[in-house]
Amino acid sequence: MSEKEMSLLGHLEELRWVIIKSLLSLIPGFAIGWYYRETIMQILLKPLLDINPNFKPIVLKPTDVFFVYVKIAFVTGIVLASPYIIYQIWSFIEPALKPHEKKIVGRILPAAVLLFFTGLIFAYFTVFKIGTVFFWGFGGEAVAPMYGMQEYWNFTLAFLLPFGLVFELPIVVSILAKLGLVTPEFLKKNRKFAILLIFVIAAFLTPGPDIISQLLMAAPMIILYEISIWLARIVKPINRFEEEEVQ
Image (cartoon, rainbow, N blue to C red; front, top):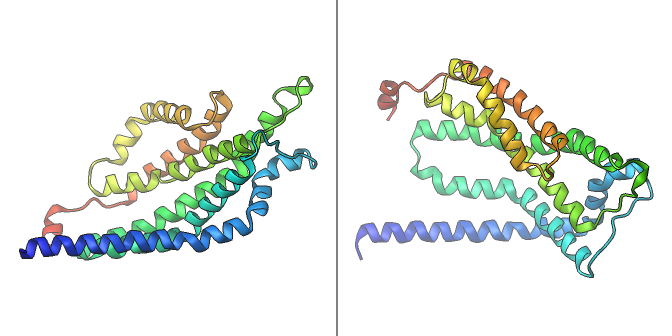
C-alpha cells in the first residue's frame, strides 16, 4: 500500500472516530433533555401560559406526547453537546490549516456559536412571544384556540431555528469583506435589493404565510444587515502579498 493510500486511510480513521465521539456525546445531553422534558415544554409554552394559565396542548394521536418528548430530548442533546462536537470537528481540520487560517477560524468559530444562540434567545423573548400572542388573539372571541402538542412543537422549532441562522449574517459579511468580495460601499449601494431579498427569505423561513410572521423575522434581519455594513468598514481585507509572506 502506498504512502498516499496510508495517509488517506489514516484520515478516514480519524474522521470515523470524530463521528463516533460526536454521536456518543449526544447521549448525556439526550438523558438530561429527557429528564427535564416537561420543564422544557413548560418553558416553550410560557407565552401561551401567560395569556391563559390553564392552557394545555391537546394530543391528537396516542404517540404524540412520546415523540415530542423524544424530539425535545434530542434537540437538547445537540445543544448541550455542540461545544464538544465543534471541538472534535476543529481537532480534525486544524492540522490541515495554515497558521493565519487557524487564527481566522479561531476568531470566527466562537463568534458564530455565540451569535447562533443569541439569535435563539432573542427570538424566544421577543419575536416568538409577540407572534404567539398575536396568533392566539387573532380570531377574537369567534374562535377558541386549541393547539396540538405536535403542531406547537413544530411551530416553535420552525420559528426559533431560523433566527439562529440569520444571526450569522454579520459573520458571513465579515468573511466576504475579509476576502475582499464585498465592501461597505457595495452593501450601502445595494441596500434596497438586500431588503427585498430579506423579505423573500423571511417569507420562505417563517412557519406561516401571514405578513406578521414575515415582518417579525425581516425586521431583525434588516438591523443585522446595517450592523454588517458597519463591520465591513472595520474588517481589513486580506493583502495577497502579505498572505504569501505569511505562508
